[in-house]
Image (cartoon, rainbow, N blue to C red; front, side, top):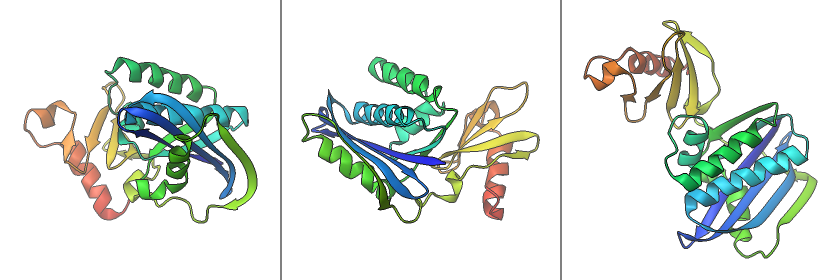
Length: 217
């Protein structure tokens, strides 16, 4: 399985944009790329960096891809947790989804900036470039995989007939046949269900909280 990291920088914000992308296989860096991305905001930079990473992966014929980024906005939007209302971001979001569909299996996960150092460094390098700089290598070992919080680990459970999947940063998506999807934010104890909005006890928050305490999720 291939893993990828992306990061975008804007200096100032908004301002010049730098893009960083890194692809690894079996803990070895096989592709690093820094690129100037024009101008825009930090969020535009993050989206452009993700697009750059996906384009590299497709060119390298990557089939199974786990993508890590430290932008909560981008990761939550591409995973369907948050909506996209900004028109410019919507165009970039559509491009991401188009590229994603060209990879057999592609998932997006949030990590902290501390665990995204390679892509962060490349994005800052990209601010200074006049043309893309892409290096292919099989010798650089990244060591241990990123330290992803337990709540970000992939998991498929069936609790109280709900299918639960973590989306990263203590956000969970709950699906139940015949009902709209529900999103639980365990960090802020919030749920998108009608019961929670009405001030009643929420089965979704309570169920996931119990799983976390048991060390299951």
